[in-house]
Image 1 (tube, helix red, strand yellow):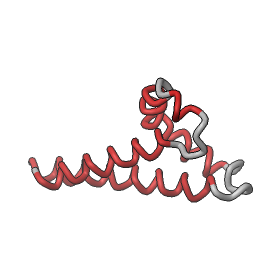
Image 2 (tube, one colour):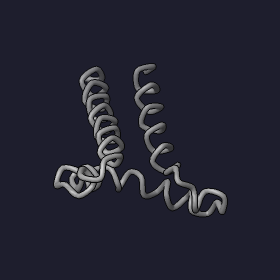
Image 3 (cartoon, rainbow, N blue to C red):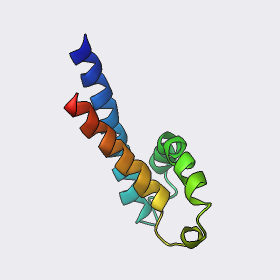
Length: 88
């Protein structure tokens, strides 16, 4: 039972990581930013990014940064959770 739960959660985290990466790559291209696929990726990933964005908006130095540190932090948390899961 424990192995099945670990496998399912690990699979979910891997899918989320893929969605994050796909969103990042599509955001680099102007024609990709307006597509339905990009809208789906934003819809799927934004609820995970939003808490980090709210937290980091309190830091004045990061407000006008061209790099979305909330996105990076959310992605790194997903990767860390997956690594912790593998250690269990």
